[in-house]
Image (cartoon, rainbow, N blue to C red; front, top):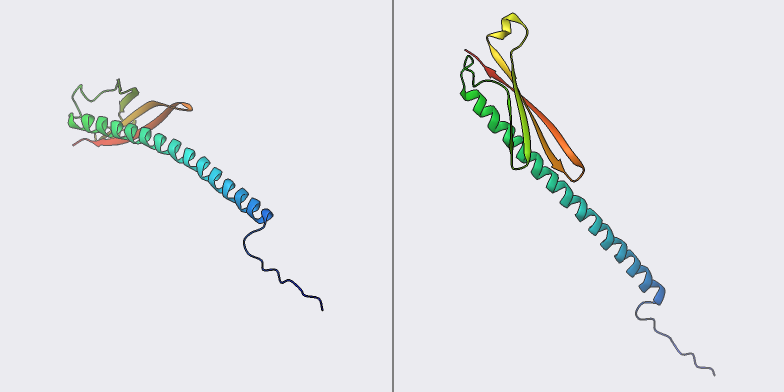
Length: 127
């Protein structure tokens, strides 16, 4: 009689272990790449929010002036490394000229890819 030794299989083979480590490494590297993109995007969003806030503040300042005062005019300013240039124009139509003014604020700020320009516009109603 020959006795057979029953072999119990427990644990992992070397190939299974290497494959699982390779998949784990690919997952960790992809998370690292994604996190750098998220950080860059959040930094850009911060700059865009600051630019929009500055434009909104400028529009509020311009709306505080009367339609006939000299304060309602174009100009430029630079704050916290962000440059802005605003214009106040009167519509060309005779019917609309006395009713509103078009306010445009061009905000320039620096990003990692260079200078970025955002243009915001609003209207100021005149009585």
